Structure formats: structure tokens, C-alpha cells
Length: 191
Image 1 (cartoon, rainbow, N blue to C red):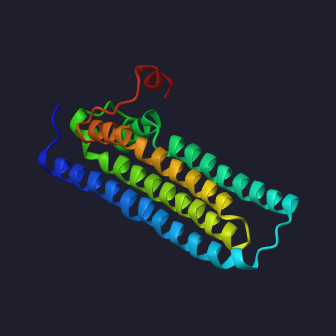
Image 2: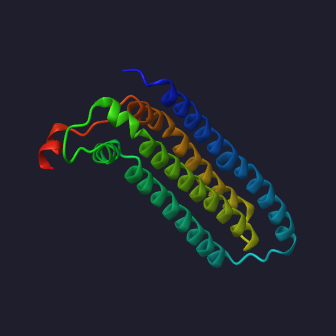
Image 3: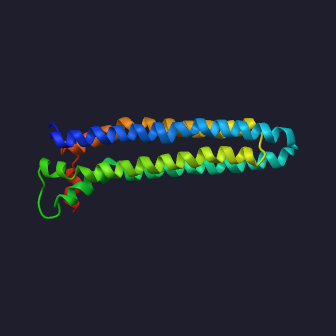
């Protein structure tokens, strides 16, 4: 089934918004954070006093916080954009508790999926910004440039994770716009 022209227009806008969010608020700040980190590291290098174990502990703490943020983003995205969970929300919003909604009734509730995925991408992007900021703060705290770069690489890998989710988002958005995002018959029987 093909989505109606209004849904196609909404699909086009949400896809463009997701790409723009990722590029402007995901990748763009990484470049800025890199420049800030290089600037701060250059100033800190002239006044640095190496204390091996303490610097190692600071790096491990910053790495642990970044890894935790990565895990939180991964978990939240899986929960907020799960196709079955979104299908259930559409089904209930379309009146699925009292009757079986048609595909057009399900498609009319696609905005629920659009907003859920947009919220997830915004939250993931904010988490990515925090990860990049941790790299800059590590440089401000006096960690060597190599440590800050490792933290920034983790933030870049996180941004690649977000980008790798875009085909899945597109598939779920398309299914919702066409009314094809439905609950399985097993779930139907449990309700």
C-alpha cells in the first residue's frame, strides 16, 4: 500500500529533519569539540605536570561516563523505536481495544510514530553532545591530548551508531505511514 500524499509529505519532512539533526547537531559539534580540545590541550601542555596513576584514573572515569552514556542512548533508542511497541501504540490510538482498525485508520495515527522517532533522535543527539563535551572537559581537566582524542573517537563511533539506525527508522516510518505497522495476532489475542 502506498502512503497518501499528505503522509508522503510528512515522511519527506521527517526524513530530512532526522538527517539535518544528525549532521548539524551530531557531527558538526564533534568538529567544534575537536578544535576546542586541541586549543585547550595546547594551553594545558605548557603547564602540565604528569602524575601517571591520577591521569589514568581520570581518563578511566571519563571513559566510563562516556560508555555509560553510549549504553543509555542505545537502550533508550531500542525502547522508544521498537516497531512492536510503536505498532501497539498506534493500534490502541486507532481504537484497537474495541475493534480492529483498518490500514487507513492505522496510517492516520502515524504521527505517533513520527514523533516517537524524532524524540529518540533528539535524545540520542543530546547524549552524543554530552559525550563530545566530556572529551573537551577531559582536556580542560589536564588529560593528555591522546586521551581526549580517544574519548572523541568514542563520541564519533556513537554518531555512526545513530546514523546506522536511520534505515531502520525509515522502514518503521514508511510502514506507519502506509498503515502496515500492525500488532501481531498473538498480541491481539492477549488484549
